[in-house]
Image (tube, rainbow, N blue to C red):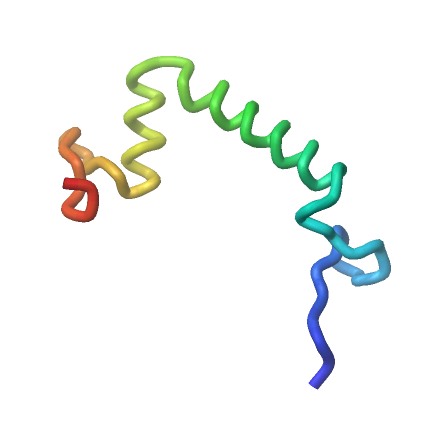
Length: 67
């Protein structure tokens, strides 16, 4: 069985992804900023994100794992 390696394309021919690399870090920070910006646009949007993540129930209460 061949070893699987992480690459940044589906064809496997691109360079390997390095989670410690500057490019990976920059892209992650950019994605995190974008997610945060969208998730905190309004209290309703923030609650929707927390519900989708399983932290809150649709009624607005914390789920069992977070009580």
